Image 1 (cartoon, rainbow, N blue to C red):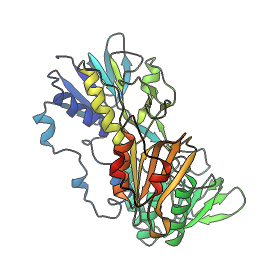
Image 2 (image 1 turned 30 degrees about the vertical axis):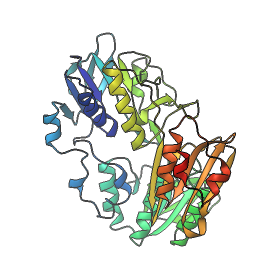
Image 3 (image 1 turned 90 degrees about the horizontal axis):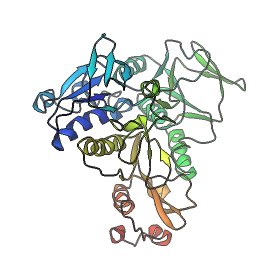
Image 4 (image 1 turned 90 degrees about the vertical axis):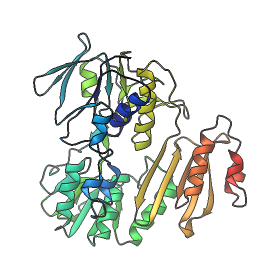
Length: 401
C-alpha cells in the first residue's frame, strides 16, 4: 500500500502504530506528529522511579534514535495540529504548514482535568501527565516539606507513595468515600488505604476542597491542611477537540468501532482518546492504559492496511505503591460476586470477580502468577473457572486455561 498515513500524537499509541504499520507491510509514507519536542517516551515511571532518581532521563525513550530512520518513519516533534480538513484530506500545523493524508490516525491521548478550585493556578500546585510535569514535580519535591495530594486515584497514590519515600509529610484528599473507587472494589481500596496510613500518610475521605492557598489547602468543613506543595491527581479528560471540530462522532472520547475506525472510514483513533466497544462487557468504554494503547495500535495497523481484525484484547493495568504491585486483568465494574484467593494479611492475594458465575476480572496484589493466569483465562470465550475453584489455593489455575 502506498497510502500516506499521518499519525497525530507521539505517545505510546502513536509510536506502536507506526511500528506496527511497517510490520504489517505498509510501504507508503508514515509521518508521526507530536506536540512535545522529544521522541516518544515511557510515562509510567514519571510518578515513581523517575521522581526518585532511580531511572535516568536517557532511559525514558521507547525506541533508540536510529529506530525512525531504520523504519523510514518521518517525525515532526514540537508541532501541534490545529485543524483537520476532512474534505481536502489535509491537516494544518501551528507552523502554518498543511500536510496531506490518505489515511489519518488520531492518538491524541488525554490531558489532566484541573477542577475549578480557587488557587489551583498557584505556582506550587502541580499536575503530572508528561515529562516536563515530572521534571517540575521532581524539582518541587526536592525542597517541599509537606505535600497535599488532591485525588486518591492511581497517579495520586503513586505520587503520594513516592513523596513518603522521600520523607515528606503527605496528606491525601479524596472526594469520595474510598481511594481508587473508579477502578477497584472496596476490599482493594481499603487495603491501599491501610497501606498508605501504615507508611505515615494522612488520608481524608469525603474531602471537599474550598480553596488552595500559598501554604495550605482549606476544606469545605473548615479544616486546614498544611502543604507547601499541592499535587492534582484529579483524573484526565480525553483530548478530542480536534475530532469534534472536524465533525467526528465523540462521546467521552472519539467513538470508534471494533476495528478502531471513527465515523470517517479514513480515520482511526486509538489509545486514551478513543471510546471503543468492549467485548468483555458489551459496553462502549474508554481505557487509559499502556496495554490498551499498544493493542489497539496493532489492530489499527491491520485496519489501515486492509486487514480487518476486531479488537478483543483483555484489558490489564498495574500500579506500584511502596512495596506493593497491584495488577488488574479484566473489568470488575457491574460484577455481582467476588471471592478472595490467598490472605490479605500476607500482602499477597487476588480477588476474582464474577457476573452470573462467569469470570470478568481479577485484581492481584503481589500475586503475579494469579495475574498471568487471569489474563489467559479471560482471553477464552469459554470460561469455566468457578468461584469455588478460584478461591481454592489447592486448585492449579493453569487447569482453567
